[in-house]
Image 1 (cartoon, rainbow, N blue to C red):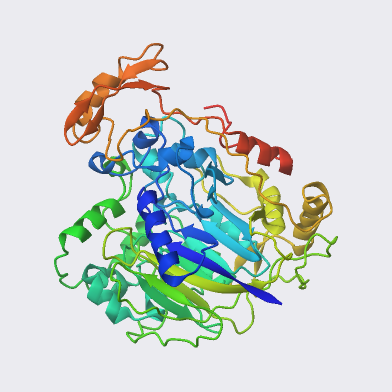
Image 2 (tube, rainbow, N blue to C red):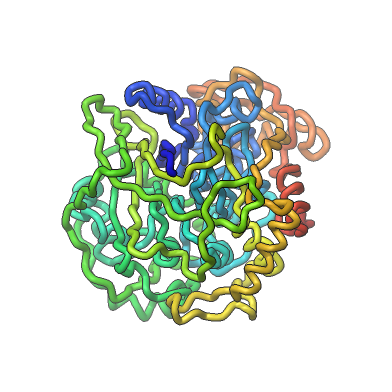
Length: 570
């Protein structure tokens, strides 16, 4: 028996939660469907207060409080269960507090630096951040206050997160990332992509559009769906079950090397061609896609290494529309006469173990390879939330029938919790390169990927089922959200920027210095709206801090691990 879940996918959020939920409700009414889950592919911007704004990596003129704080305080509630990964424009301190994942507000769940959760029979994986070669191999060296290069580097994916994701052995239905997998444009209508985004042409020709980390994960995991955002354009592609998108393995993503850059500079595949001028909207997109201006102090030289691989040239051919047997995909475009497109979706078999009667999932054998034979991966990237842009899409997916009458809820994934326990002792907490643990052996069958022994993972899964799931197969994620950070006064407009944009840095610095006790008391940090200083008292810490989050504490205690990252002494 199977049932269908209706999933909505959103591209970049950029703090526009109200608009996204409003548009989604309109689409539900138009289609006469109820959406079970909303997935947001990064740049969520869970900004609670002025300290969160200061840890966001983007020019000050883009820093606005937005509407998220109303969901954080409970003034508003997400009408649909929502999960998201982080992008490269996030409140760094808020995301760090929930590094292992957790609720940022009631009904809104952050997947952490990387993670896997279950929802109604679906296994959903996610990885936060974007790829930057000069930070990829490093550990989590950033400490408060998150200023300068550290503010941007907190958004850069690390090899430790990739290593954890590569340990997954069981099929995933969905993987969510912010930036695209490298080379994915070769598996869709590349010509149409370049028509929409002509300034991508040089990167496409060089073969460095997107993330090699995500390409490696796609090659290894092969979920039924992969969702991304970041590029602010809708694009779809399909990677066949026998096609190889990244065959260099773990060693194919080296840390940054100036010597490597010099050696490859003269071997670029295609010289850069003149690029057509972008319209004003895309200039804004380009500005937001870059790291913060403070990142100019890093040691990255102007010439970037080119990870040129021996892959076939782009197809430059249209995507063939698959059959319509099992799912419907609706483009939530602002144009009301847009004809819904239809695609076939098949959910992967889910992670199961012998049941104690609490679950009706069918058992599948353990395997070292998470790929489902013969199943392709469908890639979908979406735009940001703006009028007349393709930023939202609704998809129906067949999943195994659960308990009759049960309303889908987010659940912990046993395999992922076991991976967290196994990898936790090796979490890198400095700028030194991360190295896989000694017991991880390079697998020839898995393209040179370092894999922990199957017996070790099985042992940890047994521990999870005995000590966390209490002998069962499932455990719902508790609704244990608790607001910990101060928030703006009620009625603060979304456009408020706390003096950062309209008043400038001088006003912000003067306001910051008026608090008592080294900024821990009240201080005037003036909110700015349409260029006018708003004389509002800010109550809360002035320094950039990580607030203690009980969700992280509870999960670490549940897994019997120490919170080495958010509670370490700085």
